[in-house]
Length: 109
Image (cartoon, rainbow, N blue to C red; front, side, top):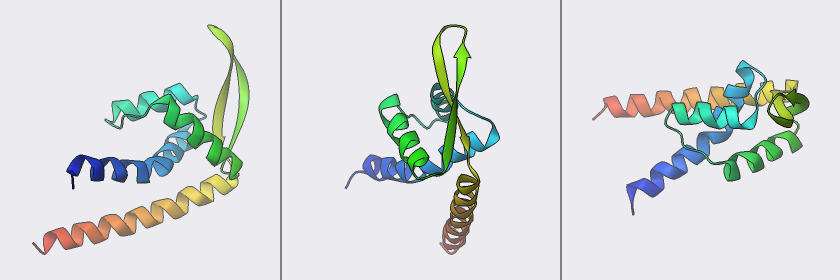
C-alpha cells in the first residue's frame, strides 16, 4: 500500500467541504476556487472541479448566476443556498469530531 494513494483519498474526501467553505466566504468563480485550493497546497484540476460543482448544484447546495466578464464570455458564479449552508454545517460538525478523535488518539502514543 502506498502512502500517496491514501493521502490522495483523504484530500478527495474533504474536497466537497473545502469547496463549500470557499464559496461560503463569497460568491465564487470555478477558477478562483481552484486558485484558492492551490494556494493551500490542494491541487485540483478543472476536470475535477466542474463535475463537483454540478453535483453540489444538483443536490440543491449551490446556486449560480451569470456575470459579465471584461475578458470574454459571461462567467458562472456560485453561491451557497440555505440547504448548502446547513449541509456545510453538518460537514463541519463531523470534521470537528473526526479531528478531535485523531488528536486525542495521537496523544495516547
